[in-house]
Length: 207
Image: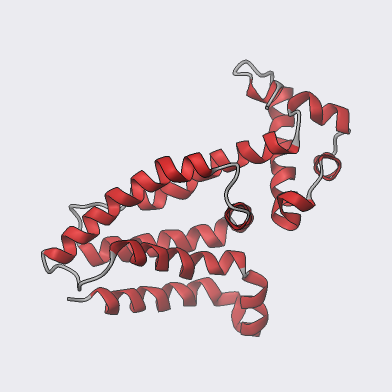
């Protein structure tokens, strides 16, 4: 569990150290995965002694869980912004763009999440089966309604969402592969990906 990090009455120094630990842990977990990471690595990355770190968190599991919980809220925000009263194709491609921007701006967080899922989501299964699933169910219903009304082409809303996740998060989770394959073009990979994915999903969804 989190110790001093869980206190709502943290001093400025405690808050700064908590943030330093979480930032260091994000870097370590994104690089080595949960199983390959240690408290010693996180402490060294944060510039703290191991006993000092353990004053704030009693285990790497506590740090990892807090990171994942904070991440899930950030991860769900782009889908929450999909407006049922908007123009369907614009709303869906807007979601694609927002997810791609997250892959660009939060690559470590994306890899942290991917690693957790690959391990069977032991520390975040409740959140996936609760808030994440509830939100996806609601947005899938909206997409199905657009499809039924003929405003977009017939499409399975769940597999559409999965496809958006796969095509956008790829640019974070497999960034080194993308960069090596593209070579000099890698500098514009997100700009080019946005153009390509927007066009691809627009053609898919056009009634």
